[in-house]
Image (cartoon, rainbow, N blue to C red; front, side, top):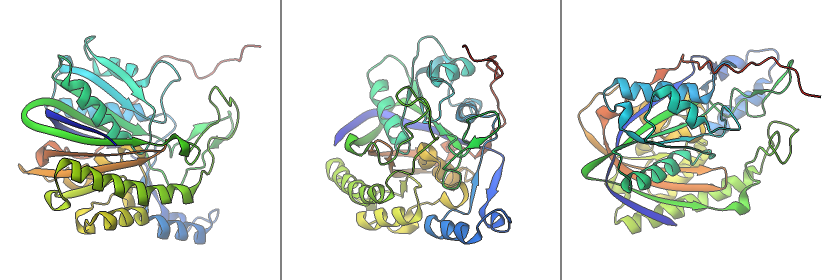
Length: 357
Protein backbone atom coordinates (compact mmCIF):
# COMPACT_ATOMS: atom_id res chain seq x y z
CA UNK A 1 0.00 0.00 0.00
CA UNK A 2 1.04 3.62 -0.55
CA UNK A 3 0.76 5.19 2.89
CA UNK A 4 0.74 8.91 3.61
CA UNK A 5 0.57 10.85 6.85
CA UNK A 6 -0.04 14.55 6.27
CA UNK A 7 0.49 16.54 9.44
CA UNK A 8 -1.12 19.93 10.04
CA UNK A 9 -3.72 19.35 7.29
CA UNK A 10 -7.39 18.94 8.15
CA UNK A 11 -10.77 18.43 6.50
CA UNK A 12 -12.34 21.82 7.18
CA UNK A 13 -15.77 21.37 5.57
CA UNK A 14 -17.92 18.91 3.62
CA UNK A 15 -20.98 19.71 1.50
CA UNK A 16 -23.15 17.69 -0.88
CA UNK A 17 -25.68 18.49 -3.59
CA UNK A 18 -28.22 16.23 -5.33
CA UNK A 19 -30.80 16.64 -8.10
CA UNK A 20 -34.38 17.52 -7.26
CA UNK A 21 -35.87 14.55 -9.11
CA UNK A 22 -36.34 11.49 -6.86
CA UNK A 23 -36.90 8.01 -8.29
CA UNK A 24 -39.10 5.84 -6.04
CA UNK A 25 -38.51 2.18 -6.88
CA UNK A 26 -41.56 1.00 -4.97
CA UNK A 27 -43.70 3.26 -7.14
CA UNK A 28 -41.99 1.89 -10.24
CA UNK A 29 -43.27 -1.55 -9.32
CA UNK A 30 -46.74 -0.23 -10.17
CA UNK A 31 -45.64 0.91 -13.63
CA UNK A 32 -47.19 -1.41 -16.26
CA UNK A 33 -44.02 -1.06 -18.38
CA UNK A 34 -41.79 -2.36 -15.56
CA UNK A 35 -41.23 -5.91 -14.33
CA UNK A 36 -42.23 -5.73 -10.63
CA UNK A 37 -40.39 -8.96 -9.78
CA UNK A 38 -37.18 -7.57 -11.26
CA UNK A 39 -37.52 -4.30 -9.34
CA UNK A 40 -38.35 -6.12 -6.10
CA UNK A 41 -35.34 -8.42 -6.52
CA UNK A 42 -33.11 -5.43 -7.26
CA UNK A 43 -34.21 -3.67 -4.05
CA UNK A 44 -33.70 -6.83 -2.01
CA UNK A 45 -30.17 -7.43 -3.34
CA UNK A 46 -28.91 -3.85 -3.21
CA UNK A 47 -30.92 -2.20 -0.43
CA UNK A 48 -31.80 0.72 -2.72
CA UNK A 49 -35.33 2.12 -2.50
CA UNK A 50 -34.86 5.67 -3.81
CA UNK A 51 -32.29 7.68 -5.70
CA UNK A 52 -31.86 11.16 -7.17
CA UNK A 53 -31.60 11.53 -10.95
CA UNK A 54 -30.36 14.59 -12.82
CA UNK A 55 -32.19 16.01 -15.81
CA UNK A 56 -30.48 16.19 -19.19
CA UNK A 57 -29.74 19.91 -18.68
CA UNK A 58 -27.45 19.37 -15.66
CA UNK A 59 -24.07 17.68 -15.28
CA UNK A 60 -22.05 16.54 -12.29
CA UNK A 61 -20.11 19.82 -12.39
CA UNK A 62 -23.31 21.78 -11.73
CA UNK A 63 -23.86 19.91 -8.47
CA UNK A 64 -20.16 20.18 -7.59
CA UNK A 65 -20.41 23.94 -8.11
CA UNK A 66 -23.45 24.13 -5.81
CA UNK A 67 -21.65 22.18 -3.07
CA UNK A 68 -18.48 24.29 -3.33
CA UNK A 69 -20.46 27.54 -3.23
CA UNK A 70 -22.28 26.31 -0.13
CA UNK A 71 -18.94 25.98 1.65
CA UNK A 72 -17.87 29.44 0.48
CA UNK A 73 -21.18 30.98 1.58
CA UNK A 74 -20.71 29.38 5.00
CA UNK A 75 -17.52 31.46 5.32
CA UNK A 76 -15.10 28.53 5.17
CA UNK A 77 -12.94 29.92 2.35
CA UNK A 78 -12.40 32.89 0.07
CA UNK A 79 -11.78 32.19 -3.64
CA UNK A 80 -8.28 33.65 -3.54
CA UNK A 81 -7.29 31.20 -0.75
CA UNK A 82 -7.74 28.07 -2.87
CA UNK A 83 -4.39 26.82 -4.21
CA UNK A 84 -5.54 23.36 -5.35
CA UNK A 85 -8.74 22.39 -7.17
CA UNK A 86 -9.19 18.70 -7.97
CA UNK A 87 -12.32 17.43 -9.71
CA UNK A 88 -12.90 13.66 -9.63
CA UNK A 89 -15.47 12.34 -12.09
CA UNK A 90 -16.28 9.63 -14.63
CA UNK A 91 -18.84 11.89 -16.30
CA UNK A 92 -16.89 15.01 -17.31
CA UNK A 93 -18.44 17.91 -19.20
CA UNK A 94 -15.79 17.81 -21.93
CA UNK A 95 -13.09 15.61 -23.40
CA UNK A 96 -10.82 18.64 -23.14
CA UNK A 97 -10.14 20.71 -21.18
CA UNK A 98 -10.63 19.14 -17.78
CA UNK A 99 -13.97 20.00 -16.21
CA UNK A 100 -11.99 21.39 -13.28
CA UNK A 101 -10.99 24.31 -15.52
CA UNK A 102 -14.63 25.28 -16.07
CA UNK A 103 -15.27 24.96 -12.34
CA UNK A 104 -12.21 27.15 -11.66
CA UNK A 105 -13.81 29.87 -13.79
CA UNK A 106 -17.28 29.47 -12.28
CA UNK A 107 -15.95 29.59 -8.71
CA UNK A 108 -13.85 32.68 -9.45
CA UNK A 109 -10.61 31.17 -8.17
CA UNK A 110 -7.19 32.78 -8.48
CA UNK A 111 -4.69 32.01 -11.25
CA UNK A 112 -2.36 30.90 -8.44
CA UNK A 113 -4.03 27.50 -8.37
CA UNK A 114 -3.25 23.91 -9.40
CA UNK A 115 -6.29 22.65 -11.34
CA UNK A 116 -6.96 19.22 -12.83
CA UNK A 117 -9.40 16.31 -13.17
CA UNK A 118 -8.93 12.74 -11.97
CA UNK A 119 -10.81 10.04 -13.87
CA UNK A 120 -11.86 7.74 -11.02
CA UNK A 121 -15.11 6.27 -9.80
CA UNK A 122 -15.99 4.85 -6.41
CA UNK A 123 -12.53 5.40 -4.92
CA UNK A 124 -12.64 9.06 -5.94
CA UNK A 125 -13.09 10.58 -2.48
CA UNK A 126 -10.21 8.77 -0.79
CA UNK A 127 -7.88 9.30 -3.74
CA UNK A 128 -8.84 12.96 -4.07
CA UNK A 129 -8.32 13.75 -0.39
CA UNK A 130 -4.99 11.91 -0.32
CA UNK A 131 -3.68 13.67 -3.45
CA UNK A 132 -4.87 17.10 -2.30
CA UNK A 133 -3.41 16.66 1.20
CA UNK A 134 -0.01 15.70 -0.20
CA UNK A 135 -0.02 18.64 -2.59
CA UNK A 136 -1.18 21.12 0.03
CA UNK A 137 1.52 20.03 2.47
CA UNK A 138 4.22 20.92 -0.04
CA UNK A 139 3.05 24.18 -1.61
CA UNK A 140 2.59 27.79 -0.47
CA UNK A 141 -1.23 27.68 -0.47
CA UNK A 142 -3.44 27.37 2.59
CA UNK A 143 -6.53 25.60 1.23
CA UNK A 144 -7.63 23.03 -1.34
CA UNK A 145 -10.98 22.03 -2.80
CA UNK A 146 -11.74 18.44 -3.75
CA UNK A 147 -14.89 18.05 -5.84
CA UNK A 148 -16.29 14.57 -6.50
CA UNK A 149 -19.38 13.84 -8.55
CA UNK A 150 -21.06 11.80 -11.24
CA UNK A 151 -24.33 11.72 -13.14
CA UNK A 152 -24.24 8.05 -14.11
CA UNK A 153 -27.98 7.70 -13.64
CA UNK A 154 -28.72 10.50 -16.06
CA UNK A 155 -26.99 8.78 -18.94
CA UNK A 156 -26.17 10.41 -22.26
CA UNK A 157 -28.09 11.20 -25.41
CA UNK A 158 -26.53 8.83 -27.94
CA UNK A 159 -28.72 10.01 -30.81
CA UNK A 160 -31.24 12.78 -31.36
CA UNK A 161 -34.07 10.37 -30.68
CA UNK A 162 -32.91 8.02 -27.96
CA UNK A 163 -31.25 8.03 -24.56
CA UNK A 164 -29.31 5.01 -23.45
CA UNK A 165 -28.14 3.97 -20.00
CA UNK A 166 -27.42 0.48 -18.68
CA UNK A 167 -26.98 1.82 -15.15
CA UNK A 168 -30.47 3.22 -14.74
CA UNK A 169 -31.27 1.33 -11.53
CA UNK A 170 -28.08 1.08 -9.47
CA UNK A 171 -26.55 4.54 -9.75
CA UNK A 172 -27.81 7.78 -8.26
CA UNK A 173 -26.57 11.26 -9.15
CA UNK A 174 -24.75 13.47 -6.64
CA UNK A 175 -21.70 15.67 -6.13
CA UNK A 176 -19.73 16.73 -3.08
CA UNK A 177 -17.19 19.38 -2.13
CA UNK A 178 -14.48 18.81 0.48
CA UNK A 179 -12.37 21.67 1.80
CA UNK A 180 -8.88 20.93 3.11
CA UNK A 181 -6.77 23.51 4.93
CA UNK A 182 -3.53 23.86 6.83
CA UNK A 183 -4.08 23.87 10.59
CA UNK A 184 -1.76 23.10 13.54
CA UNK A 185 -2.09 19.87 15.51
CA UNK A 186 -4.21 18.13 12.88
CA UNK A 187 -3.58 15.42 10.31
CA UNK A 188 -4.90 13.18 7.56
CA UNK A 189 -3.70 9.62 6.99
CA UNK A 190 -4.29 7.60 3.84
CA UNK A 191 -3.47 4.31 2.14
CA UNK A 192 -4.06 3.72 -1.57
CA UNK A 193 -3.82 0.71 -3.87
CA UNK A 194 -4.49 -0.12 -7.54
CA UNK A 195 -4.72 -3.22 -9.72
CA UNK A 196 -4.89 -2.63 -13.47
CA UNK A 197 -5.29 -6.38 -14.04
CA UNK A 198 -8.94 -5.79 -13.14
CA UNK A 199 -9.56 -2.83 -15.46
CA UNK A 200 -12.19 -4.75 -17.44
CA UNK A 201 -14.21 -5.72 -14.36
CA UNK A 202 -15.87 -2.27 -14.32
CA UNK A 203 -15.59 -0.58 -17.69
CA UNK A 204 -17.25 1.74 -20.19
CA UNK A 205 -14.81 1.35 -23.10
CA UNK A 206 -16.89 2.76 -25.94
CA UNK A 207 -17.47 6.27 -27.31
CA UNK A 208 -13.92 7.37 -26.56
CA UNK A 209 -10.81 7.43 -28.77
CA UNK A 210 -10.01 3.69 -28.90
CA UNK A 211 -13.60 2.58 -29.63
CA UNK A 212 -15.39 5.69 -30.98
CA UNK A 213 -18.76 3.96 -31.35
CA UNK A 214 -20.63 1.46 -29.26
CA UNK A 215 -22.94 0.99 -26.28
CA UNK A 216 -22.71 3.34 -23.34
CA UNK A 217 -21.49 0.66 -20.95
CA UNK A 218 -20.82 -3.04 -20.48
CA UNK A 219 -22.01 -5.29 -17.63
CA UNK A 220 -18.52 -6.02 -16.29
CA UNK A 221 -17.74 -8.90 -13.97
CA UNK A 222 -19.95 -8.68 -10.87
CA UNK A 223 -18.44 -11.77 -9.23
CA UNK A 224 -14.88 -10.51 -9.68
CA UNK A 225 -15.83 -7.11 -8.25
CA UNK A 226 -17.58 -8.68 -5.25
CA UNK A 227 -14.61 -10.96 -4.49
CA UNK A 228 -12.17 -8.09 -4.90
CA UNK A 229 -14.14 -5.91 -2.52
CA UNK A 230 -14.70 -8.35 0.33
CA UNK A 231 -11.08 -9.51 0.27
CA UNK A 232 -8.85 -6.59 -0.75
CA UNK A 233 -10.72 -3.81 1.06
CA UNK A 234 -10.78 -5.41 4.54
CA UNK A 235 -7.14 -6.45 4.10
CA UNK A 236 -6.13 -2.85 3.32
CA UNK A 237 -8.14 -1.50 6.26
CA UNK A 238 -6.39 -3.94 8.61
CA UNK A 239 -2.96 -2.98 7.24
CA UNK A 240 -3.84 0.70 7.56
CA UNK A 241 -4.86 0.28 11.20
CA UNK A 242 -1.61 -1.50 11.97
CA UNK A 243 0.48 1.18 10.25
CA UNK A 244 -1.45 4.04 11.87
CA UNK A 245 -1.39 2.38 15.31
CA UNK A 246 -5.16 2.57 15.69
CA UNK A 247 -8.07 0.17 16.06
CA UNK A 248 -11.74 0.27 15.09
CA UNK A 249 -12.60 1.30 18.66
CA UNK A 250 -10.81 4.62 18.02
CA UNK A 251 -13.35 5.71 15.39
CA UNK A 252 -16.89 7.00 15.68
CA UNK A 253 -17.81 5.70 12.23
CA UNK A 254 -16.55 3.46 9.45
CA UNK A 255 -17.86 5.20 6.32
CA UNK A 256 -17.80 2.89 3.30
CA UNK A 257 -18.49 3.48 -0.34
CA UNK A 258 -22.20 2.74 -0.72
CA UNK A 259 -21.87 -0.11 -3.25
CA UNK A 260 -24.61 -2.38 -1.95
CA UNK A 261 -25.68 -3.64 1.47
CA UNK A 262 -24.20 -7.11 1.03
CA UNK A 263 -20.73 -5.72 0.33
CA UNK A 264 -20.92 -3.17 3.15
CA UNK A 265 -21.99 -5.77 5.71
CA UNK A 266 -19.23 -8.15 4.59
CA UNK A 267 -16.51 -5.50 4.84
CA UNK A 268 -17.73 -4.28 8.24
CA UNK A 269 -17.83 -7.81 9.61
CA UNK A 270 -14.34 -8.65 8.38
CA UNK A 271 -12.78 -5.59 10.03
CA UNK A 272 -14.76 -5.93 13.26
CA UNK A 273 -16.94 -2.83 13.04
CA UNK A 274 -20.58 -3.20 14.17
CA UNK A 275 -23.14 -2.03 11.60
CA UNK A 276 -24.45 0.52 14.12
CA UNK A 277 -21.23 2.43 13.41
CA UNK A 278 -21.45 2.03 9.61
CA UNK A 279 -23.79 4.79 8.37
CA UNK A 280 -25.96 3.99 5.35
CA UNK A 281 -27.31 6.37 2.70
CA UNK A 282 -27.57 3.83 -0.10
CA UNK A 283 -31.25 3.17 0.48
CA UNK A 284 -32.21 6.77 -0.33
CA UNK A 285 -29.53 7.86 -2.81
CA UNK A 286 -28.39 4.70 -4.60
CA UNK A 287 -24.77 4.08 -5.47
CA UNK A 288 -23.43 7.61 -6.01
CA UNK A 289 -19.95 6.53 -7.10
CA UNK A 290 -17.06 8.59 -5.65
CA UNK A 291 -19.41 11.01 -3.88
CA UNK A 292 -20.99 8.32 -1.69
CA UNK A 293 -18.67 8.54 1.36
CA UNK A 294 -18.98 12.31 1.97
CA UNK A 295 -22.65 12.24 0.93
CA UNK A 296 -23.23 9.63 3.65
CA UNK A 297 -21.58 11.93 6.19
CA UNK A 298 -23.78 14.83 5.07
CA UNK A 299 -26.82 12.57 5.31
CA UNK A 300 -25.97 11.58 8.90
CA UNK A 301 -24.55 14.80 10.34
CA UNK A 302 -25.55 17.64 8.01
CA UNK A 303 -28.56 18.76 10.03
CA UNK A 304 -26.98 18.15 13.46
CA UNK A 305 -25.22 21.53 13.85
CA UNK A 306 -23.26 20.18 16.84
CA UNK A 307 -19.98 21.63 18.05
CA UNK A 308 -18.40 18.19 18.48
CA UNK A 309 -15.37 16.59 16.89
CA UNK A 310 -15.63 13.07 15.51
CA UNK A 311 -13.02 10.60 14.31
CA UNK A 312 -13.72 8.83 11.01
CA UNK A 313 -12.20 6.04 8.98
CA UNK A 314 -13.41 5.92 5.38
CA UNK A 315 -12.90 3.61 2.43
CA UNK A 316 -13.72 3.83 -1.28
CA UNK A 317 -13.27 1.07 -3.85
CA UNK A 318 -14.17 0.31 -7.45
CA UNK A 319 -13.22 1.20 -11.03
CA UNK A 320 -9.60 0.58 -11.91
CA UNK A 321 -9.53 -1.51 -9.88
CA UNK A 322 -8.62 1.01 -7.20
CA UNK A 323 -9.21 1.24 -3.48
CA UNK A 324 -8.10 3.22 -0.49
CA UNK A 325 -8.55 4.29 3.12
CA UNK A 326 -8.49 7.78 4.66
CA UNK A 327 -8.93 8.70 8.31
CA UNK A 328 -9.44 12.18 9.72
CA UNK A 329 -11.17 14.19 12.41
CA UNK A 330 -13.83 16.79 11.70
CA UNK A 331 -16.19 18.94 13.73
CA UNK A 332 -19.82 17.98 13.12
CA UNK A 333 -20.72 21.66 12.56
CA UNK A 334 -18.39 21.66 9.54
CA UNK A 335 -20.52 19.01 7.80
CA UNK A 336 -23.11 21.16 6.05
CA UNK A 337 -26.77 20.33 5.33
CA UNK A 338 -27.67 18.60 2.08
CA UNK A 339 -28.62 20.93 -0.77
CA UNK A 340 -30.71 20.40 -3.89
CA UNK A 341 -28.77 21.75 -6.85
CA UNK A 342 -30.50 24.00 -9.37
CA UNK A 343 -27.38 25.59 -10.89
CA UNK A 344 -26.76 25.17 -14.61
CA UNK A 345 -23.74 26.39 -16.56
CA UNK A 346 -24.39 27.99 -19.92
CA UNK A 347 -21.01 27.60 -21.61
CA UNK A 348 -22.06 29.00 -24.98
CA UNK A 349 -21.38 25.88 -27.04
CA UNK A 350 -24.23 25.04 -29.45
CA UNK A 351 -25.91 21.63 -29.19
CA UNK A 352 -27.35 21.76 -32.72
CA UNK A 353 -24.68 21.52 -35.39
CA UNK A 354 -23.97 19.70 -38.63
CA UNK A 355 -21.23 17.10 -38.85
CA UNK A 356 -18.29 17.83 -41.17
CA UNK A 357 -18.30 15.65 -44.28
